[in-house]
Amino acid sequence: MEALRELSRNHTLGNPIRLGVMLYLLPRERVLFKELLEVLEVTPGNLDSHLKALEKAGYIETYKVFADRPRTAVRITEKGAKETARYLRTLRAALEGV
Image: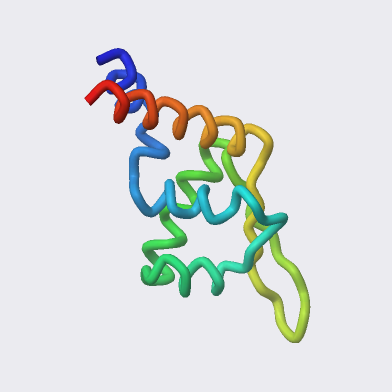
């Protein structure tokens, strides 16, 4: 039961799209906004709102990169990596208790 209470405290990662963003970012240095759109199959506005929530929580950083044109890149922060790992451990503990 404690694991379930702990999961409910982290509303940021409790959303499947935000959790998907974090899981995709964990093994990567950075990804482009367009890549996240394709992988998660969401609209640009939807993804943007979830990225803003993750950035506000300090879990990711967004910034511009310049190739053939300006593009938005996303990288996970140390805090984001730690919180995602903690959330996954808690989720696993909750599932083991079922």
